[in-house]
Image (tube, rainbow, N blue to C red; front, top):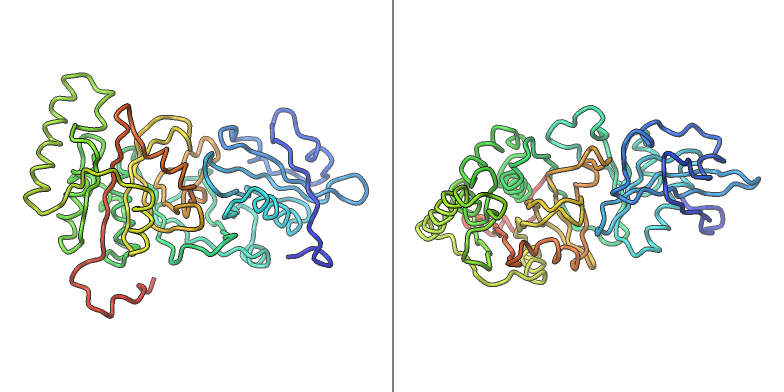
Length: 367
């Protein structure tokens, strides 16, 4: 909703520190939701975007956060003159060169969000625990969006991210019905792919080929040594390394190519342009603050960023499925995140479109 005469809304941006109650909140005169104070959001750069009023107070304010090294902002809540607060956040995002603003649906109605130029996000297919996130969310792209949205499904264990990204890729591609995305499917695919408990790239690629024989699958892994084992003892590494060797043998037997070259960001963009899906292994150190290997799905591109689905959100930091769904990550950040361990290897699984589709399947799937 534009301001009168199309003039930009003036705003003040200050860090949000719950214990010190920033001055914009003190002057606002509106009730601030308790959720602003009950979660430690410090890892995601929380700040207040406030719109000054005519008589010294503040007309509106929004609590805004975002994962580090990404290309979006998220409105947790807006209070006061909500349209003015949201307009100020959008202007703030544009000033920072970001490509997207999201809005958690704790208090925002579909009508208010639509009036501000936001589209509803599809609700997650996996249940959202009480307090772990809103039931609804909204998105506004500040550039041309990436196209058809995949369903969002959050992993239900700490170790099934690889299986979930593969399932979401197949649902987005029209190979798997959305309603088939459930915990049984998640655990079944993980059991076939796991290196106990993680899914390494070759094992995951072989499991995808077994589950969907008509889907072209290519594993990209630019090291020939076993991966994701550095934190285990030598004895624990030995039998897991043997399983990874078995995965390589099975890849050769089933016709799953293992490309030893380094997969570039340009190649990932090209694959997405061909309507392929790329399951990418990265570290959560830059986005979440801890160096844990994790699978995400690369499914869209926008100027300067790749759009991913992250099946995991850190509820303790105020991070929700709204952050993890349709998440734009700058190319340079994604390049750094997906260069792993001292060997600086990259692991990915590219899934193409099923080979048996005829020419009519060139039309986008009706989702």
